[in-house]
Length: 463
Ligand SMILES: Cc1cc2nc3c(=O)[nH]c(=O)nc-3n(C[C@H](O)[C@H](O)[C@H](O)COP(=O)(O)OP(=O)(O)OC[C@H]3O[C@@H](n4cnc5c(N)ncnc54)[C@H](O)[C@@H]3O)c2cc1C
Image (cartoon, rainbow, N blue to C red; front, side, top):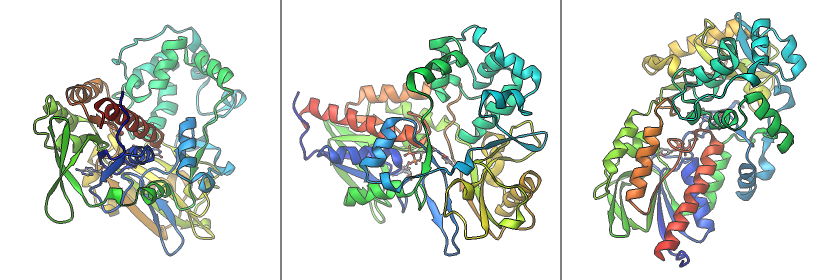
């Protein structure tokens, strides 16, 4: 195989963390990526807002899990290793609402025995998990059915339902266990039991190592550091409208701040959200009409509401990561992060900051609500749960009209459509959170994968 020519230009569609990671890796390999990003700022869902009064809050994701060694290595490679700040030990505790009260999630077997989060009946039922039969290997089982079958209804209601709200803002009855939680699905398939599988993995891997981290100026430091190294390879306010193929060459039609333009590339990498990919004009691309199905990916709205208070205006000690709210409890919010406990520098002296999520599949009509209504719902719930008194002294609402793709039952058809279009169009590659997983860590891995397959393709064409 010939080596990829160092001059090869590759179009990267979308300047979120997936596209930026792919571009960074391709540039490091001596290729010439060009990132097209429609927004005025890079990073996609990742963004932070500092204020002159001393608040600092995230607009989208709040933290990154250092689970896979590749994530830690990537942070080091882009030069941010020393900037990493880990979640404070004071944030170890996690709360779940039960009976309208915050109950700490147990962190040890003894804690589990004593916890008020689950009844004795539920605890006894959980102990039988290793002896329950293995479920189906296909993707036809929902997270709710999977958990009910293995762990019982109460565990679904008070552990998995709130957890799913915190990760996907989604509905366990609709999410596919195989697509949404592939590791959990694999644990049952490989070991016949979640408990047995988890113990075995713990023994072989030396236990869970994933630590949660961010950066002093928020997660945005990551895309900004990458963009700093990519230089003018990143084109902001450049919206891609279409892609075309002629022989082995690719043409990208885009709209910079004014006018329209077309440029030629050796390959095209999409790191766009599913609906944006579905909206592209793809002339002369066999099978490309299949991408239209990505419009059907459910992506409900979420609002991230940051509220700041004087310390004495909040009764709860805020001694933890935050609180998640099960759907069976009578509240509007999905959960709240104790942001100023989690990381330093998030609130001015003598103040605390909370980040509350509301919406998702529980409240899909959220988009239509006025900001003051959203703030009022959040205030009411925070008053009942953590005892906030009076109005916040700082508040900011960030709306995400299409927040997180739901890997629901039948998600395989979206992946199959993407796969078919790639197979019919050599030199076109798709990644990002519509395909490779929704966490930032998944997206960093997706960017690495995209860079790898693109290099492989260019080598095969001698480009
Ligand atoms: C509210 C919220 C909270 C989250 N919390 C966490 C968390 O705590 N931890 C975690 O790991 N993950 C979290 N996530 C998930 C994670 O942030 C995202 O899945 C991930 O950042 C997606 O990255 P991406 O690059 O694939 O897509 P995106 O970030 O969506 O980037 C896609 C980019 O494409 C651009 N674009 C779209 N159309 C066009 C076009 N036609 N031309 C050019 N550019 C275009 C967009 O402007 C965007 O910048 C959260 C997500 C949200 C919304």
